[in-house]
Image (cartoon, rainbow, N blue to C red; front, side):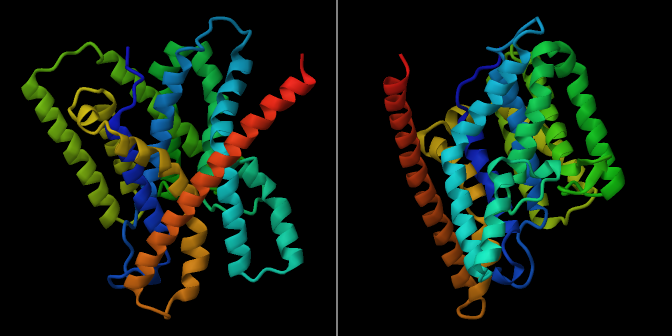
Length: 363
């Protein structure tokens, strides 16, 4: 059975794969070296997180395996709700920061701010990929919307038909959906575009990526009992590193296109190696630093977009692009730190208040 311990390499990779996403959202004029864009296909990193989410969805499901109809829906609701609540204190702070910055940068009047505030509800309750017209202060929460809603569909299938889903349904879903996206759009980076009927490409990308991650789990499970020699471990570790170097090289050189789907395959293979726990990376990189970087990766993801797209462009021409680049990095660090601090305080206050209220009103 695959171990459920923290994998130091995965925690570091969470942080490293956030970087191309934050870079691609910068206005091209902020680039300190010419007018090009760093990581032109950096959005491919989102597929890394979809696949990883699928893998850990299966890990979480091991305690919820059931063989009857009763309980599948309840366990699914609890699973998705737990993921949402764990993120919520930080998520709502990131939404508040983004709301303030975007309305300030756009010099929104009271009426516009009121309209924006009302439509932000579809960001708080992440339903963007179901075509709800949302004002999106974070700019990137469509990923959470696609992930949560995909898991609502896939988790009960996993609980009820585990063997069939992991071995047959999951890989076929991934192949079919990515094939449809490739055929219809020629690139993987589509979100609100329709794909199959009213279903958006972003939602179906979530289905595909999470299913691919579930199939990845099955592969690591099948190879769990294989013992490697020191030489084989060393060779596999080298191959692992080379795959990630190649992935980041391609993201930094290629525009989005048909090559996107090759990059998804490379990410899948690289993650299969890493999550097999048969290389030295997991042991070598397991430390407090990588754990911390993994923890803040989602906070960086949620707290960079408004700065990059709305605030920093206001200062173009007032100083050099290199200075803007440095200021942007510091601003993201400060915003993430505040989000972490306020989120932790909010989490503590919520737990404290609910505990007191239970003592007062419940027997």
